[in-house]
Image (cartoon, rainbow, N blue to C red; front, side, top):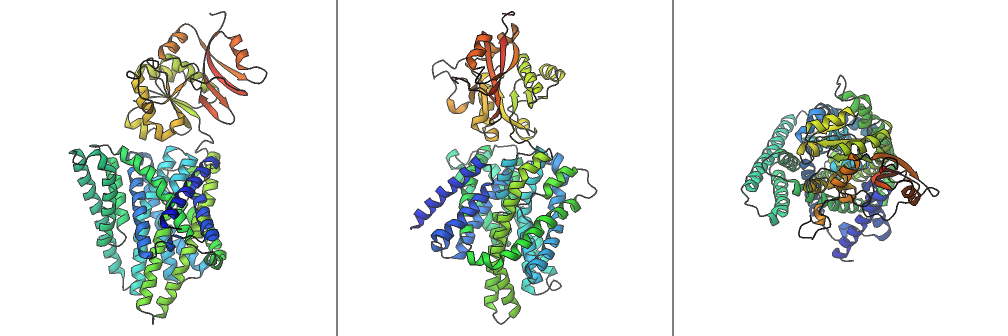
Length: 609
Protein backbone atom coordinates (compact mmCIF):
# COMPACT_ATOMS: atom_id res chain seq x y z
CA UNK A 1 0.00 0.00 0.00
CA UNK A 2 1.33 3.44 -0.93
CA UNK A 3 1.69 6.31 1.53
CA UNK A 4 -1.24 8.07 -0.14
CA UNK A 5 -3.50 5.06 0.30
CA UNK A 6 -2.37 4.63 3.90
CA UNK A 7 -3.15 8.26 4.79
CA UNK A 8 -6.49 8.09 3.00
CA UNK A 9 -7.32 4.93 4.94
CA UNK A 10 -6.34 6.63 8.21
CA UNK A 11 -8.58 9.60 7.43
CA UNK A 12 -11.53 7.34 6.73
CA UNK A 13 -10.88 5.29 9.86
CA UNK A 14 -10.55 8.49 11.90
CA UNK A 15 -13.91 9.80 10.67
CA UNK A 16 -15.57 6.46 11.49
CA UNK A 17 -14.07 6.47 15.01
CA UNK A 18 -15.15 10.07 15.64
CA UNK A 19 -18.65 9.40 14.34
CA UNK A 20 -19.07 6.24 16.41
CA UNK A 21 -17.86 8.11 19.50
CA UNK A 22 -20.45 10.82 18.84
CA UNK A 23 -23.26 8.31 18.37
CA UNK A 24 -22.30 6.17 21.37
CA UNK A 25 -21.42 9.17 23.59
CA UNK A 26 -17.90 7.84 24.19
CA UNK A 27 -14.56 9.68 24.27
CA UNK A 28 -13.34 9.76 20.68
CA UNK A 29 -9.72 9.27 21.80
CA UNK A 30 -10.61 5.86 23.24
CA UNK A 31 -11.90 4.56 19.91
CA UNK A 32 -9.01 6.14 17.99
CA UNK A 33 -6.46 4.37 20.21
CA UNK A 34 -8.25 1.03 19.85
CA UNK A 35 -8.66 1.41 16.08
CA UNK A 36 -5.02 2.43 15.58
CA UNK A 37 -3.67 -0.46 17.66
CA UNK A 38 -6.00 -2.97 15.98
CA UNK A 39 -5.06 -1.70 12.52
CA UNK A 40 -1.39 -2.34 13.22
CA UNK A 41 -1.96 -5.78 14.76
CA UNK A 42 -4.32 -7.16 12.10
CA UNK A 43 -2.89 -5.57 8.94
CA UNK A 44 0.70 -4.80 9.90
CA UNK A 45 0.38 -1.24 8.57
CA UNK A 46 2.42 1.33 10.49
CA UNK A 47 3.56 4.86 9.82
CA UNK A 48 7.16 3.66 10.25
CA UNK A 49 6.81 1.68 7.01
CA UNK A 50 6.45 4.96 5.14
CA UNK A 51 8.39 7.40 7.31
CA UNK A 52 11.62 5.58 8.16
CA UNK A 53 13.35 8.43 10.01
CA UNK A 54 12.06 8.45 13.59
CA UNK A 55 13.39 11.97 14.15
CA UNK A 56 11.32 13.20 11.19
CA UNK A 57 8.21 11.49 12.58
CA UNK A 58 8.70 13.03 16.02
CA UNK A 59 9.26 16.46 14.47
CA UNK A 60 5.99 16.11 12.55
CA UNK A 61 4.19 15.00 15.70
CA UNK A 62 5.70 17.95 17.58
CA UNK A 63 4.39 20.41 14.98
CA UNK A 64 0.93 18.86 15.15
CA UNK A 65 0.97 19.13 18.95
CA UNK A 66 2.02 22.79 18.61
CA UNK A 67 -1.02 23.48 16.41
CA UNK A 68 -3.32 21.84 18.96
CA UNK A 69 -1.84 23.83 21.85
CA UNK A 70 -2.09 27.06 19.84
CA UNK A 71 -5.76 26.33 19.15
CA UNK A 72 -6.24 25.57 22.82
CA UNK A 73 -4.61 28.88 23.75
CA UNK A 74 -7.09 30.69 21.51
CA UNK A 75 -9.92 29.38 23.72
CA UNK A 76 -8.43 30.69 26.98
CA UNK A 77 -10.00 33.97 28.08
CA UNK A 78 -8.66 35.94 31.05
CA UNK A 79 -12.29 36.70 31.99
CA UNK A 80 -12.66 33.03 32.98
CA UNK A 81 -10.04 33.53 35.68
CA UNK A 82 -12.32 35.79 37.71
CA UNK A 83 -13.98 32.70 39.18
CA UNK A 84 -11.44 30.03 38.19
CA UNK A 85 -8.15 31.91 38.70
CA UNK A 86 -7.25 30.60 42.16
CA UNK A 87 -7.98 26.92 41.34
CA UNK A 88 -6.07 27.21 38.04
CA UNK A 89 -3.05 28.73 39.81
CA UNK A 90 -3.04 25.99 42.45
CA UNK A 91 -3.41 23.21 39.86
CA UNK A 92 -0.61 24.62 37.70
CA UNK A 93 1.84 25.07 40.61
CA UNK A 94 1.23 23.10 43.81
CA UNK A 95 -0.61 20.25 42.11
CA UNK A 96 2.11 19.88 39.46
CA UNK A 97 4.85 19.65 42.11
CA UNK A 98 2.87 17.13 44.17
CA UNK A 99 1.96 15.04 41.10
CA UNK A 100 5.60 15.02 39.95
CA UNK A 101 6.86 13.80 43.33
CA UNK A 102 4.14 11.20 43.86
CA UNK A 103 4.32 9.85 40.29
CA UNK A 104 8.07 9.42 40.66
CA UNK A 105 7.61 7.44 43.88
CA UNK A 106 4.76 5.33 42.48
CA UNK A 107 6.85 4.59 39.36
CA UNK A 108 9.75 3.45 41.53
CA UNK A 109 7.65 0.98 43.53
CA UNK A 110 5.50 -0.34 40.66
CA UNK A 111 7.89 -0.23 37.69
CA UNK A 112 11.21 -0.82 39.45
CA UNK A 113 13.10 1.66 37.26
CA UNK A 114 16.11 3.70 38.29
CA UNK A 115 15.20 6.91 40.11
CA UNK A 116 16.30 8.99 37.11
CA UNK A 117 13.88 7.24 34.74
CA UNK A 118 11.13 7.35 37.36
CA UNK A 119 11.61 11.10 37.67
CA UNK A 120 11.45 11.42 33.88
CA UNK A 121 8.17 9.48 33.85
CA UNK A 122 6.88 11.66 36.70
CA UNK A 123 7.72 14.85 34.81
CA UNK A 124 6.07 13.70 31.59
CA UNK A 125 2.87 12.47 33.24
CA UNK A 126 1.99 15.70 35.06
CA UNK A 127 0.37 16.77 31.77
CA UNK A 128 -3.22 16.20 30.72
CA UNK A 129 -3.73 18.11 27.48
CA UNK A 130 -6.40 19.55 25.16
CA UNK A 131 -6.35 16.51 22.87
CA UNK A 132 -8.08 14.44 25.54
CA UNK A 133 -9.65 17.09 27.77
CA UNK A 134 -11.59 18.87 25.01
CA UNK A 135 -13.48 15.76 23.76
CA UNK A 136 -14.35 14.77 27.34
CA UNK A 137 -15.59 18.28 28.15
CA UNK A 138 -17.67 18.24 24.99
CA UNK A 139 -19.19 14.96 26.16
CA UNK A 140 -19.71 15.99 29.81
CA UNK A 141 -20.64 19.68 29.34
CA UNK A 142 -20.00 20.65 32.97
CA UNK A 143 -20.68 24.04 34.49
CA UNK A 144 -18.66 26.94 33.15
CA UNK A 145 -16.40 27.26 36.20
CA UNK A 146 -15.38 23.59 36.22
CA UNK A 147 -14.94 23.57 32.44
CA UNK A 148 -12.68 26.63 32.66
CA UNK A 149 -10.51 25.05 35.37
CA UNK A 150 -10.06 21.80 33.45
CA UNK A 151 -9.42 23.60 30.16
CA UNK A 152 -6.82 26.01 31.60
CA UNK A 153 -5.05 23.23 33.47
CA UNK A 154 -4.87 20.98 30.42
CA UNK A 155 -3.37 23.64 28.18
CA UNK A 156 -1.06 25.44 30.61
CA UNK A 157 0.41 22.32 32.20
CA UNK A 158 1.44 20.77 28.88
CA UNK A 159 4.50 23.00 28.27
CA UNK A 160 5.29 22.84 31.98
CA UNK A 161 5.54 19.05 31.78
CA UNK A 162 7.92 19.31 28.82
CA UNK A 163 10.13 21.81 30.67
CA UNK A 164 10.11 19.61 33.78
CA UNK A 165 11.23 16.66 31.66
CA UNK A 166 14.10 18.77 30.28
CA UNK A 167 15.24 19.50 33.84
CA UNK A 168 15.26 15.79 34.71
CA UNK A 169 17.14 15.02 31.50
CA UNK A 170 19.82 17.55 32.43
CA UNK A 171 20.30 15.72 35.74
CA UNK A 172 20.64 12.42 33.84
CA UNK A 173 23.23 13.95 31.50
CA UNK A 174 25.39 15.42 34.28
CA UNK A 175 25.04 12.41 36.54
CA UNK A 176 23.91 14.12 39.76
CA UNK A 177 21.64 16.90 40.91
CA UNK A 178 24.43 18.64 42.82
CA UNK A 179 26.47 19.03 39.64
CA UNK A 180 23.54 20.17 37.55
CA UNK A 181 21.47 22.56 39.65
CA UNK A 182 23.05 25.61 37.96
CA UNK A 183 22.32 24.07 34.53
CA UNK A 184 18.74 23.39 35.62
CA UNK A 185 18.27 26.96 36.81
CA UNK A 186 19.71 28.28 33.56
CA UNK A 187 17.46 25.94 31.53
CA UNK A 188 14.36 27.18 33.40
CA UNK A 189 15.24 30.84 32.90
CA UNK A 190 16.20 30.31 29.27
CA UNK A 191 13.09 28.27 28.45
CA UNK A 192 10.76 30.74 30.16
CA UNK A 193 12.45 33.76 28.57
CA UNK A 194 12.56 32.27 25.07
CA UNK A 195 9.09 30.71 25.23
CA UNK A 196 7.26 33.68 26.74
CA UNK A 197 9.35 36.33 24.95
CA UNK A 198 9.12 34.76 21.51
CA UNK A 199 5.39 34.10 21.97
CA UNK A 200 4.80 37.72 23.03
CA UNK A 201 6.80 39.09 20.09
CA UNK A 202 4.97 36.93 17.57
CA UNK A 203 1.59 37.89 19.05
CA UNK A 204 2.38 41.59 18.70
CA UNK A 205 3.67 41.08 15.17
CA UNK A 206 0.53 39.20 14.15
CA UNK A 207 -1.65 41.83 15.79
CA UNK A 208 0.04 44.67 13.86
CA UNK A 209 -0.17 42.81 10.54
CA UNK A 210 -3.88 42.07 11.03
CA UNK A 211 -4.77 45.56 12.26
CA UNK A 212 -3.16 47.11 9.18
CA UNK A 213 -4.72 44.49 6.90
CA UNK A 214 -1.35 43.48 5.48
CA UNK A 215 -2.43 39.83 5.39
CA UNK A 216 -5.15 39.17 2.81
CA UNK A 217 -8.16 37.21 3.97
CA UNK A 218 -7.43 34.19 1.79
CA UNK A 219 -3.95 33.83 3.34
CA UNK A 220 -4.85 34.20 7.01
CA UNK A 221 -5.34 30.52 7.83
CA UNK A 222 -2.11 29.47 6.13
CA UNK A 223 -0.34 32.46 7.67
CA UNK A 224 -1.27 31.30 11.18
CA UNK A 225 -0.09 27.76 10.43
CA UNK A 226 3.23 29.22 9.31
CA UNK A 227 3.51 31.43 12.39
CA UNK A 228 2.89 28.45 14.66
CA UNK A 229 5.56 26.47 12.82
CA UNK A 230 8.08 29.33 13.00
CA UNK A 231 7.37 29.93 16.67
CA UNK A 232 7.61 26.25 17.59
CA UNK A 233 10.74 25.46 15.60
CA UNK A 234 12.48 28.76 16.37
CA UNK A 235 11.93 28.44 20.11
CA UNK A 236 13.09 24.84 20.19
CA UNK A 237 16.25 25.85 18.32
CA UNK A 238 17.01 28.48 20.98
CA UNK A 239 15.90 26.49 24.06
CA UNK A 240 15.06 22.79 24.13
CA UNK A 241 11.28 22.10 24.45
CA UNK A 242 10.38 25.79 24.73
CA UNK A 243 8.29 25.68 21.56
CA UNK A 244 5.16 24.42 23.32
CA UNK A 245 5.32 27.38 25.71
CA UNK A 246 5.74 29.77 22.78
CA UNK A 247 2.67 28.61 20.86
CA UNK A 248 0.58 28.52 24.04
CA UNK A 249 1.54 32.11 24.93
CA UNK A 250 0.90 33.15 21.33
CA UNK A 251 -2.60 31.67 21.36
CA UNK A 252 -3.55 33.13 24.77
CA UNK A 253 -2.35 36.65 23.89
CA UNK A 254 -4.16 36.66 20.55
CA UNK A 255 -7.35 35.42 22.21
CA UNK A 256 -7.32 38.27 24.75
CA UNK A 257 -6.44 41.26 22.57
CA UNK A 258 -9.34 43.40 21.36
CA UNK A 259 -8.02 45.10 18.24
CA UNK A 260 -8.80 42.36 15.74
CA UNK A 261 -11.03 39.30 15.74
CA UNK A 262 -9.42 35.86 15.53
CA UNK A 263 -12.71 34.01 15.82
CA UNK A 264 -12.58 32.75 12.24
CA UNK A 265 -9.08 31.41 12.84
CA UNK A 266 -10.29 29.56 15.92
CA UNK A 267 -13.09 27.93 13.91
CA UNK A 268 -10.58 26.81 11.26
CA UNK A 269 -8.21 25.46 13.91
CA UNK A 270 -11.04 23.56 15.64
CA UNK A 271 -11.73 21.68 12.42
CA UNK A 272 -8.02 21.11 11.88
CA UNK A 273 -7.68 19.82 15.46
CA UNK A 274 -10.20 17.03 14.81
CA UNK A 275 -8.20 15.98 11.75
CA UNK A 276 -4.85 16.14 13.56
CA UNK A 277 -6.06 14.28 16.64
CA UNK A 278 -7.47 11.50 14.46
CA UNK A 279 -4.22 11.07 12.54
CA UNK A 280 -1.93 11.37 15.58
CA UNK A 281 -3.66 8.83 17.77
CA UNK A 282 -4.13 6.36 14.93
CA UNK A 283 -0.48 6.65 13.88
CA UNK A 284 1.12 6.60 17.34
CA UNK A 285 -1.03 3.81 18.77
CA UNK A 286 -0.22 1.79 15.64
CA UNK A 287 3.52 2.00 16.43
CA UNK A 288 3.11 -0.04 19.63
CA UNK A 289 3.84 -3.74 19.22
CA UNK A 290 1.84 -6.39 21.06
CA UNK A 291 5.10 -7.87 22.39
CA UNK A 292 5.95 -4.54 24.02
CA UNK A 293 2.56 -4.39 25.73
CA UNK A 294 2.82 -8.00 26.90
CA UNK A 295 6.22 -7.31 28.46
CA UNK A 296 5.01 -4.46 30.67
CA UNK A 297 1.22 -4.80 31.03
CA UNK A 298 1.22 -6.17 34.59
CA UNK A 299 3.36 -3.48 36.15
CA UNK A 300 1.74 -0.98 33.81
CA UNK A 301 -1.69 -1.70 35.33
CA UNK A 302 -0.33 -1.30 38.87
CA UNK A 303 1.27 1.98 37.84
CA UNK A 304 -1.99 3.11 36.24
CA UNK A 305 -3.91 2.28 39.41
CA UNK A 306 -1.43 4.31 41.44
CA UNK A 307 -1.91 7.32 39.17
CA UNK A 308 -5.71 7.15 39.34
CA UNK A 309 -6.19 6.22 43.00
CA UNK A 310 -3.26 7.99 44.68
CA UNK A 311 -1.50 10.61 42.60
CA UNK A 312 -4.39 12.59 41.14
CA UNK A 313 -6.65 12.69 44.23
CA UNK A 314 -3.73 13.58 46.50
CA UNK A 315 -2.47 16.34 44.20
CA UNK A 316 -5.95 17.90 43.92
CA UNK A 317 -6.96 17.78 47.56
CA UNK A 318 -3.52 18.75 48.93
CA UNK A 319 -3.08 21.64 46.50
CA UNK A 320 -6.49 23.05 47.49
CA UNK A 321 -6.05 22.80 51.25
CA UNK A 322 -7.25 25.98 52.92
CA UNK A 323 -8.83 27.29 49.72
CA UNK A 324 -12.53 28.12 49.46
CA UNK A 325 -12.36 28.82 45.73
CA UNK A 326 -13.64 25.32 44.93
CA UNK A 327 -16.25 23.18 46.67
CA UNK A 328 -15.66 19.60 47.76
CA UNK A 329 -17.79 18.36 44.86
CA UNK A 330 -15.71 20.33 42.36
CA UNK A 331 -12.49 19.03 43.88
CA UNK A 332 -13.80 15.46 43.76
CA UNK A 333 -14.67 15.86 40.09
CA UNK A 334 -11.21 17.29 39.35
CA UNK A 335 -9.61 14.47 41.34
CA UNK A 336 -11.27 11.98 39.01
CA UNK A 337 -10.41 13.71 35.75
CA UNK A 338 -6.80 13.56 34.54
CA UNK A 339 -6.61 11.83 31.15
CA UNK A 340 -3.23 11.78 29.42
CA UNK A 341 -2.99 12.54 25.73
CA UNK A 342 -0.76 13.05 22.75
CA UNK A 343 1.70 15.39 24.50
CA UNK A 344 2.62 12.65 26.97
CA UNK A 345 3.11 10.18 24.13
CA UNK A 346 5.16 12.59 22.02
CA UNK A 347 7.42 13.80 24.84
CA UNK A 348 7.98 10.21 26.00
CA UNK A 349 9.08 9.15 22.52
CA UNK A 350 11.39 12.17 22.23
CA UNK A 351 13.22 11.56 25.51
CA UNK A 352 13.40 7.80 25.00
CA UNK A 353 15.13 8.49 21.70
CA UNK A 354 17.38 11.13 23.32
CA UNK A 355 18.49 8.68 26.03
CA UNK A 356 19.13 6.00 23.42
CA UNK A 357 21.35 8.38 21.41
CA UNK A 358 23.08 9.47 24.61
CA UNK A 359 23.86 5.85 25.53
CA UNK A 360 25.11 5.05 22.01
CA UNK A 361 27.71 7.80 22.31
CA UNK A 362 29.11 6.21 25.49
CA UNK A 363 28.41 2.43 25.31
CA UNK A 364 30.95 1.71 28.05
CA UNK A 365 28.78 3.55 30.59
CA UNK A 366 26.68 0.70 31.99
CA UNK A 367 24.34 3.01 33.87
CA UNK A 368 23.50 5.00 30.75
CA UNK A 369 22.84 1.80 28.82
CA UNK A 370 20.51 0.60 31.61
CA UNK A 371 18.69 3.94 31.68
CA UNK A 372 18.24 3.81 27.90
CA UNK A 373 16.79 0.28 28.10
CA UNK A 374 14.35 1.32 30.81
CA UNK A 375 13.45 4.48 28.88
CA UNK A 376 12.46 2.34 25.89
CA UNK A 377 9.90 0.62 28.13
CA UNK A 378 8.34 4.03 28.83
CA UNK A 379 6.71 4.14 25.40
CA UNK A 380 4.38 1.10 25.84
CA UNK A 381 3.87 2.04 29.50
CA UNK A 382 2.69 5.53 28.59
CA UNK A 383 0.44 3.98 25.93
CA UNK A 384 -1.17 1.88 28.69
CA UNK A 385 -1.53 5.02 30.82
CA UNK A 386 -3.13 6.97 27.97
CA UNK A 387 -5.53 4.17 27.08
CA UNK A 388 -6.35 3.45 30.72
CA UNK A 389 -6.88 7.05 31.82
CA UNK A 390 -8.93 7.94 28.76
CA UNK A 391 -11.13 4.87 29.25
CA UNK A 392 -11.50 5.34 33.02
CA UNK A 393 -12.00 9.10 33.13
CA UNK A 394 -13.89 9.26 29.85
CA UNK A 395 -16.48 6.72 30.96
CA UNK A 396 -16.66 8.01 34.54
CA UNK A 397 -16.64 11.78 34.01
CA UNK A 398 -20.17 12.24 32.63
CA UNK A 399 -22.10 10.19 35.22
CA UNK A 400 -19.91 11.58 38.02
CA UNK A 401 -20.54 15.18 36.96
CA UNK A 402 -24.29 14.53 36.86
CA UNK A 403 -24.21 12.80 40.26
CA UNK A 404 -22.36 15.75 41.77
CA UNK A 405 -24.74 18.24 40.16
CA UNK A 406 -22.03 19.74 37.96
CA UNK A 407 -23.68 18.90 34.64
CA UNK A 408 -26.92 17.64 33.12
CA UNK A 409 -27.49 14.28 31.45
CA UNK A 410 -28.98 15.64 28.25
CA UNK A 411 -28.90 19.43 28.42
CA UNK A 412 -32.07 20.54 26.65
CA UNK A 413 -32.78 23.85 28.37
CA UNK A 414 -33.75 26.83 26.22
CA UNK A 415 -31.76 30.05 25.86
CA UNK A 416 -34.24 32.67 24.63
CA UNK A 417 -32.78 35.65 22.80
CA UNK A 418 -35.49 38.19 23.52
CA UNK A 419 -37.70 38.87 26.53
CA UNK A 420 -41.01 40.03 25.10
CA UNK A 421 -44.21 39.53 27.16
CA UNK A 422 -45.26 36.56 25.04
CA UNK A 423 -41.78 35.02 25.41
CA UNK A 424 -42.15 35.30 29.17
CA UNK A 425 -45.48 33.46 29.00
CA UNK A 426 -43.88 30.62 27.05
CA UNK A 427 -40.76 30.49 29.22
CA UNK A 428 -42.84 30.49 32.41
CA UNK A 429 -44.75 27.42 31.24
CA UNK A 430 -41.52 25.56 30.41
CA UNK A 431 -40.04 26.60 33.76
CA UNK A 432 -43.07 25.33 35.69
CA UNK A 433 -42.71 21.98 33.95
CA UNK A 434 -39.15 21.66 35.31
CA UNK A 435 -37.20 22.75 32.23
CA UNK A 436 -34.25 25.14 32.44
CA UNK A 437 -34.71 28.47 30.67
CA UNK A 438 -32.70 31.66 30.39
CA UNK A 439 -33.84 34.90 28.74
CA UNK A 440 -31.50 37.59 27.40
CA UNK A 441 -32.54 41.13 26.52
CA UNK A 442 -30.98 44.59 26.57
CA UNK A 443 -34.08 46.36 27.91
CA UNK A 444 -34.17 46.64 31.68
CA UNK A 445 -37.97 46.81 32.00
CA UNK A 446 -38.40 43.52 30.09
CA UNK A 447 -35.71 41.75 32.11
CA UNK A 448 -37.19 43.05 35.40
CA UNK A 449 -40.66 41.84 34.41
CA UNK A 450 -39.30 38.37 33.63
CA UNK A 451 -37.51 38.20 36.96
CA UNK A 452 -40.73 39.10 38.75
CA UNK A 453 -42.24 36.02 37.12
CA UNK A 454 -39.46 33.94 38.71
CA UNK A 455 -37.54 33.47 35.47
CA UNK A 456 -33.76 33.51 34.96
CA UNK A 457 -33.38 36.69 32.91
CA UNK A 458 -30.11 38.49 32.14
CA UNK A 459 -29.67 41.99 30.80
CA UNK A 460 -27.23 41.41 27.94
CA UNK A 461 -26.99 41.59 24.19
CA UNK A 462 -27.19 38.14 22.62
CA UNK A 463 -24.47 39.22 20.17
CA UNK A 464 -22.11 40.48 22.88
CA UNK A 465 -18.85 38.83 23.88
CA UNK A 466 -20.23 38.58 27.40
CA UNK A 467 -23.16 36.41 26.29
CA UNK A 468 -20.94 34.12 24.28
CA UNK A 469 -17.96 33.71 26.59
CA UNK A 470 -18.90 34.63 30.16
CA UNK A 471 -22.46 33.40 30.71
CA UNK A 472 -22.78 29.98 32.32
CA UNK A 473 -24.85 28.08 29.78
CA UNK A 474 -24.72 24.76 31.61
CA UNK A 475 -27.92 22.78 31.16
CA UNK A 476 -28.96 24.77 28.10
CA UNK A 477 -29.07 22.85 24.84
CA UNK A 478 -30.94 25.09 22.39
CA UNK A 479 -30.88 28.73 21.34
CA UNK A 480 -34.28 30.11 20.33
CA UNK A 481 -33.87 33.62 18.96
CA UNK A 482 -37.20 35.50 19.18
CA UNK A 483 -36.33 39.20 19.16
CA UNK A 484 -38.48 41.60 17.08
CA UNK A 485 -35.49 42.07 14.74
CA UNK A 486 -35.20 39.25 12.19
CA UNK A 487 -31.61 40.16 11.28
CA UNK A 488 -30.52 39.98 14.93
CA UNK A 489 -32.20 36.57 15.17
CA UNK A 490 -30.26 35.35 12.15
CA UNK A 491 -26.95 36.69 13.44
CA UNK A 492 -27.50 35.19 16.89
CA UNK A 493 -28.31 31.81 15.37
CA UNK A 494 -25.16 31.89 13.28
CA UNK A 495 -22.91 32.99 16.16
CA UNK A 496 -24.11 30.24 18.51
CA UNK A 497 -23.79 27.38 16.04
CA UNK A 498 -20.36 26.50 17.43
CA UNK A 499 -21.79 26.34 20.97
CA UNK A 500 -24.97 24.33 20.43
CA UNK A 501 -24.52 22.85 16.95
CA UNK A 502 -26.43 23.74 13.79
CA UNK A 503 -29.28 21.39 14.64
CA UNK A 504 -29.99 23.23 17.91
CA UNK A 505 -29.98 26.90 16.96
CA UNK A 506 -33.44 28.22 16.09
CA UNK A 507 -35.05 31.48 15.15
CA UNK A 508 -38.63 32.57 14.80
CA UNK A 509 -39.77 32.64 11.18
CA UNK A 510 -38.91 36.04 9.63
CA UNK A 511 -41.76 38.17 8.32
CA UNK A 512 -40.12 38.18 4.87
CA UNK A 513 -39.49 34.41 4.70
CA UNK A 514 -41.80 34.01 1.71
CA UNK A 515 -40.41 37.02 -0.18
CA UNK A 516 -38.14 36.83 -3.20
CA UNK A 517 -34.66 35.44 -2.44
CA UNK A 518 -33.16 38.87 -3.13
CA UNK A 519 -34.86 40.23 0.01
CA UNK A 520 -34.49 37.31 2.46
CA UNK A 521 -31.51 36.27 4.53
CA UNK A 522 -29.45 33.47 2.96
CA UNK A 523 -29.97 30.00 4.39
CA UNK A 524 -26.39 29.67 5.68
CA UNK A 525 -26.75 32.94 7.62
CA UNK A 526 -29.69 31.88 9.78
CA UNK A 527 -30.91 29.17 12.15
CA UNK A 528 -33.68 26.64 11.77
CA UNK A 529 -37.21 28.06 11.68
CA UNK A 530 -39.16 26.96 14.74
CA UNK A 531 -42.78 26.60 15.88
CA UNK A 532 -45.26 24.58 13.87
CA UNK A 533 -46.66 26.38 10.85
CA UNK A 534 -43.96 29.07 10.94
CA UNK A 535 -45.71 31.94 12.79
CA UNK A 536 -43.66 35.13 12.82
CA UNK A 537 -43.11 37.51 15.73
CA UNK A 538 -46.23 39.61 15.18
CA UNK A 539 -48.42 36.52 14.76
CA UNK A 540 -47.48 35.20 18.21
CA UNK A 541 -47.52 38.64 19.85
CA UNK A 542 -51.05 39.32 18.58
CA UNK A 543 -52.22 35.84 19.53
CA UNK A 544 -51.08 36.25 23.16
CA UNK A 545 -52.44 39.80 23.37
CA UNK A 546 -55.88 38.48 22.42
CA UNK A 547 -55.89 36.01 25.29
CA UNK A 548 -54.03 32.89 24.21
CA UNK A 549 -52.66 30.81 27.09
CA UNK A 550 -50.07 28.04 27.35
CA UNK A 551 -51.28 24.45 27.48
CA UNK A 552 -49.26 21.31 28.08
CA UNK A 553 -50.74 18.24 26.35
CA UNK A 554 -49.64 14.63 26.10
CA UNK A 555 -50.08 13.17 22.65
CA UNK A 556 -50.46 9.38 22.51
CA UNK A 557 -51.73 6.77 20.12
CA UNK A 558 -55.18 7.33 21.66
CA UNK A 559 -55.14 11.15 21.77
CA UNK A 560 -53.42 12.21 18.54
CA UNK A 561 -52.56 15.56 16.99
CA UNK A 562 -55.83 15.47 15.05
CA UNK A 563 -57.77 15.04 18.30
CA UNK A 564 -55.87 17.96 19.77
CA UNK A 565 -56.81 20.20 16.85
CA UNK A 566 -60.44 19.20 17.20
CA UNK A 567 -60.28 20.25 20.85
CA UNK A 568 -58.65 23.61 20.18
CA UNK A 569 -59.47 25.41 16.96
CA UNK A 570 -56.94 28.24 17.34
CA UNK A 571 -53.55 26.91 18.38
CA UNK A 572 -49.82 27.45 17.93
CA UNK A 573 -47.66 24.44 18.82
CA UNK A 574 -44.25 25.64 19.98
CA UNK A 575 -42.27 22.91 21.79
CA UNK A 576 -42.34 19.18 22.29
CA UNK A 577 -40.70 16.88 24.83
CA UNK A 578 -40.10 13.15 25.02
CA UNK A 579 -37.69 10.90 26.89
CA UNK A 580 -35.56 10.06 23.86
CA UNK A 581 -34.80 13.53 22.47
CA UNK A 582 -35.73 15.79 25.39
CA UNK A 583 -37.18 19.27 25.04
CA UNK A 584 -36.91 20.98 21.66
CA UNK A 585 -38.78 23.46 19.47
CA UNK A 586 -41.12 22.02 16.88
CA UNK A 587 -39.77 22.43 13.36
CA UNK A 588 -41.82 25.01 11.46
CA UNK A 589 -42.48 22.76 8.46
CA UNK A 590 -43.13 19.53 10.40
CA UNK A 591 -45.94 17.58 8.75
CA UNK A 592 -47.06 15.84 11.93
CA UNK A 593 -46.07 15.14 15.52
CA UNK A 594 -46.00 11.51 16.52
CA UNK A 595 -46.77 10.40 20.08
CA UNK A 596 -46.06 9.62 22.76
CA UNK A 597 -44.74 13.13 23.28
CA UNK A 598 -45.66 16.18 25.33
CA UNK A 599 -46.42 19.38 23.42
CA UNK A 600 -46.38 22.97 24.67
CA UNK A 601 -48.86 25.17 22.83
CA UNK A 602 -50.44 28.59 22.83
CA UNK A 603 -54.17 28.04 22.55
CA UNK A 604 -57.24 30.24 22.33
CA UNK A 605 -59.84 28.32 24.27
CA UNK A 606 -63.27 28.13 22.63
CA UNK A 607 -65.10 30.16 25.23
CA UNK A 608 -62.45 32.87 24.98
CA UNK A 609 -62.52 32.77 21.21
